[in-house]
Image 1 (cartoon, one colour):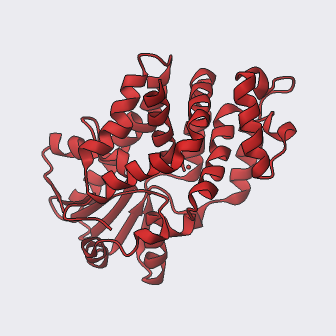
Image 2 (image 1 turned 60 degrees about the vertical axis):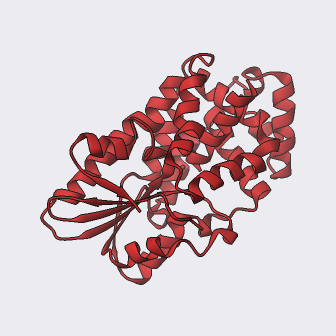
Length: 297
């Protein structure tokens, strides 16, 4: 059960809404007309991780289009707040304390209070929003800053270069994905993420180590592989898997193929979360299955 909780916490680092060695999570794809670089990122990074491997910067410098999961600078704050107001809170008369065990609710209360969120407010959160809010506490605990995440660093560079920027998704599409999960899956995800909260440092170190060495197999074991194992004991967890990976990986793959094969003569630098690239159903395998060769740099 402890391994299950650890796996869920690793997976949670993906929704946060990403020093490499000889091999990295950078891939090169040559399509019919264009070259596409795909960087598997960790969306949130410690400042000590920089500078990254020079091959990544060289690939970025050789590109004229940046593709990201979403461009934070383009978020419509009013639209997002309206969505949260309509979807992040439980119906009148329903409380989070009635959906999770008393011990877990007390622990959750303590952690939210350190973030300045009172119990009365937290108790109205739907489980998916409570988990997302809990991630803010994790950022504080790890000392991570969104502005030094891989995506944000290259977005800033792209804006300085006046590069074309393409979003694969939007903040709204990601929020809708999270909020559409069945309540039972939301509760499982919140409970187990909460229980391993105190071990987040070691969990993140294990994840970062695999990323630094470009160990795609290990990243798959830590994410998709573990989640499939969890499905044996956690009812409905594969519904989460399908939303988080199956559907999105397929959609991202189709878009990357279009970038590689269109006639616009561009070099694309694509940044997506590393877990989307790995596994038998990840983007790299999907590309290879469609006859598109990928080279890990």
